[in-house]
Structures are given as C-alpha cells and as structure tokens.
Amino acid sequence: MKGIAYGVGVGPGDPEYMTLKACRLIRENEVIAVPGKVARESVAYKIAVAAVPELAEKTLVPVYMPMVKDRAAIDAEHRKAAELFETYLDRGQNVVFLTLGDPTIYCTFSYIQHYLEADGYQIELVSGITSFCAAAAALTVPLVEWDEQLHVLPAVHKLEHALDAPGNYVLMKSASKMAQVKEMLRRSGRKVSMVTNCCMEGEQRYHGVDEIPDDAGYFSLIIAKE
Image (cartoon, rainbow, N blue to C red):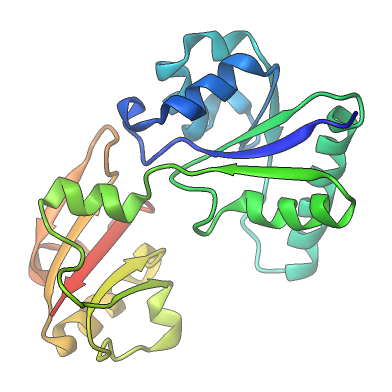
C-alpha cells in the first residue's frame, strides 16, 4: 500500500502552540519533509524539534523553493518535490511535511498537494495555529466580533487596495513595501497594530501606523480594524 502525505501545521513559532496531533505524527513517522535548502536550518524544523526532540533522528527531506517570480520555474520545483515525495510514498512510507502556521493558508504544501492528488496519492491536512490568530492573541485584540467580516489579504500593495470594505483586515506578505502599505493604512483611517516575528525570538509589537518601521522584517503581520 502507498503511504499518505501529511501537511502538518506547526503553528507560528512557539513550540507550545503545536498541536498534540502534529507531535504524534512526527513521532510515529520516519520521513519528515521541511521547507528550505538545509533541513535543520528550517524555521519549521526548529519549532518542531523543540517540541519533539526525537525529530532530530528522523529522515529529513528538505524541500527548497527558490524565491523567483517565474511561474513555470516555481511549478517545476513543485513537481520535483511531489516526485521526491512519491519515491517514499510508493514504498509505503508516509511523508510528513512541516509548515509554519496552518497548511491551508498560503502554504507551499498546497501546490505539492495538487500534483500528488493528480497522481492518485492520499493527502491529509493537520491544522495549526495561524500567524494572524497568534498575532491577534499577542496584541490581545479580537479579530472579529458580532457580525464583523474578516478580510485576509496577501501583498496588499500589489492591489492598491482602499481597505474600505466593511469589517477588519489582516495584511500579510507586505513587508517589502511597508512604506506604501503604511500610506494605504493612513488613508483608511483604521486602528492599526502589527507584530513581527510573532511567537519567535525578537518578537516586536507596534500600535499605530507611525510606530511601524519602513524596514519591517519578512514575518510582519498587520491587523487593521474599523
């Protein structure tokens, strides 16, 4: 029988935020895939190994995805990763792919998953705490109340969004254009908070647009409320 490919969320950074199910799957399976060129340098690996020390003795499979804009090149890397997973799955071994946050939110595994499903392999996803839920908790800010809507936008600077829909916003993947994003936030008139490196070493919290640095790091997440 073929193995199962698991997409497992390890949460935002704090090992204590890992679910019992995620820890159990790591313990029970030998083949653990992690995003990055060097497995032991992966952020997901460092989070998981702190919660499950025996991970260090597993078969680690690095999955490197270069940061390029060429869609064909990216798709080729996803296909390559799927084929690598299939070499283990065909031997009846499960593959557990560790991902930051949750495997259903802007996750590399989603693209590998599509190839594996097309090739007839079984997929299971194990939810983890998302970065925006962890950030809201760190800020002690409710994301939504009553009948408020929640809008989760990646790279909002590319959309030149007015942020004028009813409800609250989560802005992800916008650190590279933070000055532009801050101007959009000012125009929106919303109450703004941001967390960088949430649940990781060097976590910083900001309250108000003017506190947010233009050179904010990659792991920066903004919450903008009505």
